Amino acid sequence: MNLGIIVNPFSGRDVRRVAARASTSDHHEKQQQVTRLVLGAFSTGVERVFLANEPFRINEKAVENLPVRDQVEILRFKLEHSAEDTRTMCRQMWNAGCRVFIVLGGDGTSRIVASEIPNATILPLSTGTNNVFPYRLEASVAGAAAGLIASDTVAADSCIRCKRVHIEYGDDKETALIDAVLLRNDFLGSLLPFNSENLDTIVLTRAEPASIGISPIGGYILPCGFHDDFGVMVKCNENTAQKINVPISPGLHQYVGIEETIPLDFNLKSEISGPGIIAVDGDRIIKLDEQQSANVFILRDGPRVIEAEKVMNHAAHNQLFDKSELPD
Image (cartoon, rainbow, N blue to C red; front, side, top):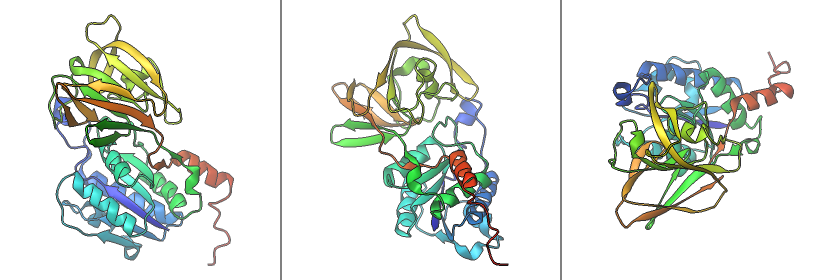
């Protein structure tokens, strides 16, 4: 009956607020979201919530005046002020008995969580920029839905595992929840929006036309959603006749030249070759030199994902919200 809430305090605050027109998720808004998540979770049967310390005291302030404060534990560890903090949160909460998690952040935060605890059940909530994986959902509802799963009122195995892109290069491996992109003439670690002229090869688990970022590049031509048992590969070429105008970042539209768009069956390996940078869920983290290549393929082997509306409807249809037999 434990629930872990993982908060990325830095999400929704990077340079894309300057380079594009992305909205900002400040500390106060995250604090209010955490408060609503906690109260929502306790309303549907969770007995204990685990949070973690972070540099801005978002979590501490979120719960300090709540009547359930003694049922909330804030785990403490030495902060690295990097993605390693998210990994540490995952490990500590898992060791504390959490198997269900709410992840407050963007695609990148959810990717780290999925990599660290792939057998967890998660409800991802968006506070980032070009997000496809996390939901935009009122936190009170998200907390209640996660609480139904964490309390085993609704079975976790009713939730579907998400797809992931697997990237194998040399002796190393990496995964992405939504997209892996081979970029030409780009730089490791850059946080700027992608330049469409640098796009070479895109591998997508979800190609959704009603999204933003890389996903609609495939979605405008060959839509593919969360439940579809295939992925999409797009070969880009600025010199081709076929072009689409996509929102590469909030308020930033670019034309992308499309050479080829093909469906990818699960476990079908494709080779992409350097030189270039591979970005996973927007993070430019892999460098391929001239003679290097990587194999990419898609599997449905990520964490189970809580679909809040589905869970809440299931609970309602089965009278699981009925508390009339509770003692006074």
